[in-house]
Length: 264
Length: 351
Ligand SMILES: Nc1ncnc2c1ncn2[C@@H]1O[C@H](COP(=O)(O)OP(=O)(O)O)[C@@H](O)[C@H]1O
Ligand SMILES: [Mg+2]
Image (cartoon, rainbow over all chains, first blue to last red; front, side, top):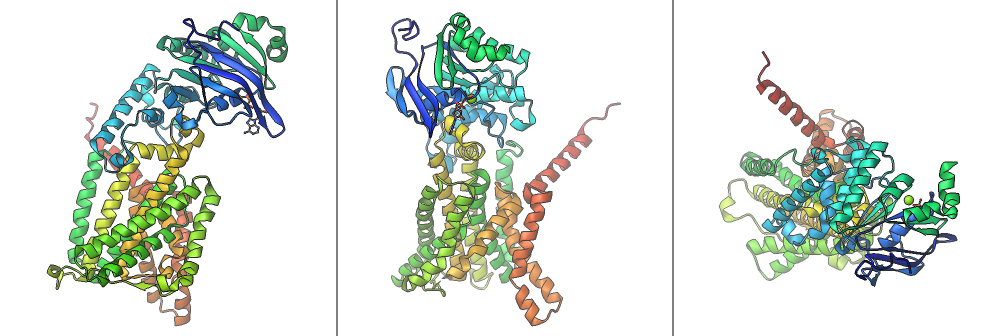
């Protein structure tokens, strides 16, 4: 249908949402929404507050079960289970921060490496070499990720003691540390200043270079327009437009529902 | 928070402390050795509880029931072995293992129910177990011995100890050995990836799940491990008192364990140690003060017991207000100050 349905070599899309409907009691948060994310692309999801963007992520992550519709990963229908996502190569950063407040920055990022845990509970109970070695290796990897984002100096700090922009980076570091092949970012620019958003844009653009697809939920129109290959626009749970940034910004329905509101 | 004390430092402190305490048992009078053993028994349970509540965020008011489970499993096994005329280390070790197994199974059952509950609901369910305990023991009194409980045939002190410290010294050794094993294993867990999982679940369940942590499994395992620790504590109590009865593991004990964990410094094993010491020392101090006041027998009787509960409550409120990280928090702060003063002195003075 759209040129984004399949990858360049005809490979199945990294992620495909087919006719997803989510109802909370009487409220329809999503109505028959279909979105495809080809491998190695950056897909933006825009829409006013309450449009259903976070709900869409929650469906992908198995936090909510859709009332109807299916989730496909690499062409196969799956019933996502939240704690198995990183095993499927999917990472997500939460809207806001979602950090572990009682743990250091380093520990927050190491927590993102659960999928690398190969030893058993009893090896941890007895502090056997495999368990302690794995801990050390994870810490090294997490430090490398922190360094790549330029925040390794804060490794020992508690998140609450740090400026918001750095905490935001920590939450992205936790999502990136497992080297995902699909990254879901929920409003990563929320609460950031102009320069920090520029930096974030550079970071997001660099991610597909590592063979990773990105889904970006964002309010910040300039950011979405500048980093995304394609954009889907939600309004009151309905998909009102889909296409390249140029197509979407030229769409009168979008201007009315979203950009219009923004301009007013 | 990590790395404040290196792994090697804590190991050295642990080993030196252990040797010092064992040495202490040679000089203490029997009654003090018995108190030392009581501290160690409490430490098993408080350490497990502080991990569950402080590290994993699950509140349990049922740990006295889990101690009781350990004590009764110890009693059944020890009496069964004694009937077969089995003695020696077997009569000590096998009942303790039985206590661990029993408390682990009960903990697993409660933990499975608890994994879906939060805060007050979880506290309520665990509370129910403590409240139900006397009813269970009197309903099945031919098994549990009713309110009186069971007398236990325990392994006597080894021959070579005769004439030295006697029974109480042996009791202290057994209790300290059990507490040491519990503390070392819990410390391993708290520093491992499982420790990180427990803290992540405590801090943010959704983020923990997204990071790949099975939230329900983590909670169930934490509850089970914590129960096993409480079971060992109960077994040691049973061994020391040569009895297992519902009265020894009532709601007050559950509250005392929780208060000990909070006052000592919730979520830390050092804190569990400080709290357990207070559990034994504070009532003792209160007792000698009230005795010194030469109160009328009636007033003294009314104060007895109640005063300890009231004072513990007051201390806990005070700690929550002035030192939210408990005694261990104060110890750490003092350590920092001493160290930073030391480094200031050793730093070269600018000329
Ligand atoms: N768990 C829930 N229960 C009830 N309503 C919900 C729930 N989660 C989201 N909603 C509702 O669904 C709609 C979409 O929410 P959301 O996906 O968070 O919007 P946004 O696009 O701002 O991320 C909102 O009206 C919200 O109130
Ligand atoms: Mg949202």
